[in-house]
Length: 193
Image 1 (tube, rainbow, N blue to C red):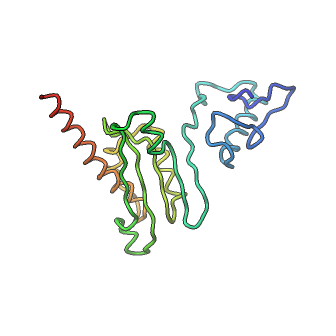
Image 2 (spheres, rainbow, N blue to C red):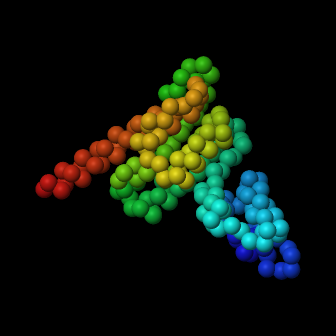
């Protein structure tokens, strides 16, 4: 499989979706992933090349996963365990905010939470994990945060347009900022010794 064009390498046969197998556009098996792959295939069929400058191999970044159960489960990016393996045990932390901290909860109480996985050095968000009503809609903001390399400081400053459970992102980020600041203070104290 030629991942940037979705060409199979045989004749004029292109593949998209589940039949494409393992591909750089993650995660495979999602309808939206198949749509992204189909776009590449059609573009390659009729234009004969995939414009690297417009649609790089990493164009789609980390795709969010939405599991349509009751309640919803959604995630994007690294899990806490994956982040610790990649960056080290002492450099990764998490912050979780329950839906009950939002104004929306007062209007429509539903159980759920937003969990951020982030680096203690600088606060870059590595993953977002959600559970509860609207998690499958809210994960897209998390995907934007993770894919653009935003920090918990940027998320903390975000003002949501409506009274939604999405406010939990800001609460989780605020708690994360305290952890990042404490980590920085410990580093300064160690450097003085």
